[in-house]
Amino acid sequence: MKLFIRRVTVWVAYPIQVLLLWLSYSVCFVCKVRPAARKEWAVGIDEVAANVHNISSALGDAVSVNMSPHPFYSFNYDHFLPARIGGKYLRYIVRIVYSPILLGYLCHRVNGFFYVAGAGYLLSDWDGRSFEFRFLKSRGLKITCFFCGSEIRSVRLMNQLSRDLGRDMISTYQAIAVPGFDADHLESFRMKLAASADEYADHIFNAPVDQISYLRRAVHPFIYFYPDNSFKRNDEKYADIRRVKVVHGPSSPLIKGTPLVRAAIKKLQEEGYDFEYRELIGVSNQVMLRALADAHVVLNEFYAFVPGQFGVEAMASHCALITSADARIETTLPNGANSAWMVTEYWNIYDNLKRLLDDHALIKQYADAGFAWASEHCSYQKSAVRLKALLETPGTSVHA
Image 1 (tube, one colour):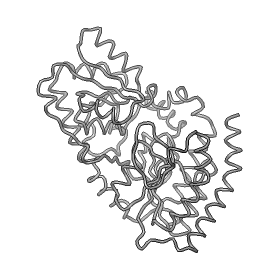
Image 2 (cartoon, one colour):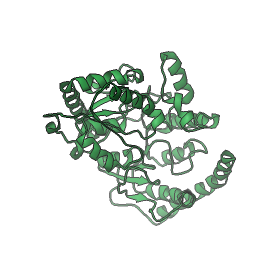
Image 3 (tube, helix red, strand yellow):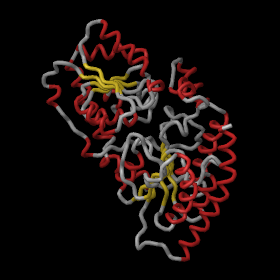
Image 4 (tube, one colour):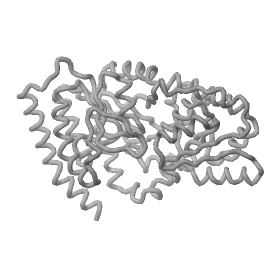
């Protein structure tokens, strides 16, 4: 029934959105809503792991757009739905009306649109953003697609990769954590999302193994962006470790491997190891960062092949990172990745955490290596240079 209601909503709302887009674009054209100097990018449209905020900040010459409140982050954006618009359904209705109007307006204010994840200004369920992209390209505007994870990751292809490699992956548990996640209509949407990006995007960013998808074109490697002033090296917390502090902060416990983490923690405690373990679920990013500031070891996620935003935050907080991210599998990770953290398959969590608890010098070694790697490959300053250089290369869209 929910799927039927969703489809009816899209069938009714999408033509209205198209009309609103045309009206907004035309009115802004007639009224000459054009600045003396356009911004280069509009970055949006839903916040995912702080990427909208971080990328727009790193690019500098950009406006930020966020239509959805985030449970962990509270940043300021140039265009957003006010928090006072309460209620999920009311916000959804307002968004349906406001987003196409905003898109028409921004067409006259920016040179390109930087799409984070899979949402569009129009309801992307309709055609995977194909019409929206075609509208923008016909007006000479640039398009960049920056995929972040499950919006583009094919469950079918990931399950096949799981069988090929003989190990559990995120897709093994996603349909358990979110019933229906592997439904045919969602897989079809991921196909449409990939097809529209292949046809219209000037640039596509993706982690091709960790986010295995139906994309056919070559992609740029996923880039992390983390504020330079948030890198906080703290050698003092390693000067005399009396009790190791371990943190695990899963956004989704089942698909991050939390049951296996708990089993490893329990076994070590039963063996008499004395350490502090903090498991943080559903807390704000500020609470998480305060915990990382004091932590020595961070247990990240154990079915992924990239460190993720939380992994970057841990390394930037000068913590030793234990995670399944592995450059031997996700070969697009920057050089030195596998030395920046302790590569740990889900069946080795206990063994590798035990190694660190037995060797405090090794904790410091990984903390130093991770901090150096993240500083080089994930900071605003360094990542912005790489991103701008890639965006200045000729686009490869067939409609470029």
